[in-house]
Every structure is written in structure tokens, then in C-alpha cells.
Image 1 (cartoon, helix red, strand yellow):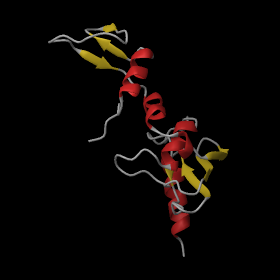
Image 2: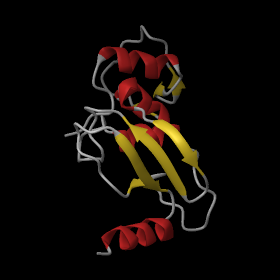
Image 3: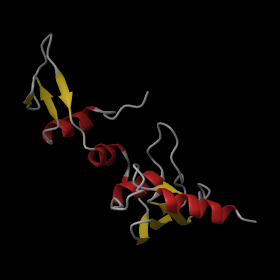
Length: 143
């Protein structure tokens, strides 16, 4: 299973941000739970991912518009997402890119179109809309 809060430090940060409530009230760091307490967490997706993902996976943004982003992937960083793995250039790019305001914007903010090998550095194309993704994949698939 994939856990958003993988350490005591990440739980502490969520409490300090005011993202944890017990019985409907924002809690302080020293709160002890009693039987029957209801714990609620509100973790904005980007804040949660920032806590989980190392800075070295964040690629340099070369170009970005409403439909497409081009980023520079460093050597040794995985290119695209795998279930339960957040340390990829694709996830790092999602943390930095602006959400698209276009009607067919991807819910995951951006999706890798090409996947450079882990041990290669180079440009990655990330589509920010469904139409851009399908057009780029079709174009790159041509002989």
C-alpha cells in the first residue's frame, strides 16, 4: 500500500500546516488521541507530494504552455510514473507545472509522452491536455 505520510516528520508537517483535525478541531503537535477520537486529514495534493518526493527528481522546465511542457530530465532519474513510486521526472514536473485551463486538461496535470532511459539525460515531452497527448503519441509512433 502507498502511504502519503511515510514518517513522523511528514505527519508533524501536516499538523503544523493545520491539515489535521481531531473531532473537527485543528490540533496542536502534542495532542494525544483518546478512544473514539475522529481524525481527519486534508492534504492538498501538491503539498503532500512535495513532502514525499525528493528535490533531485524535479526537472528543469525548458518550455511550458497550456497544452505542452518540455523539461530536462537528469541522468539517473526514472522518467515516468509507476504505481507507488513518486521519485520520477514525470512526478517532479507535475509539482512545478501550472495547471492547464483548457477544456480537455489532464486531471494529473501532465503526462509523459516520451520516456528517456533512466541513465540518460535529455528532453522529455509532457502533454497537459488529452488532445496534445494523443496527437504527440500518434506523431512519435509514425515510422
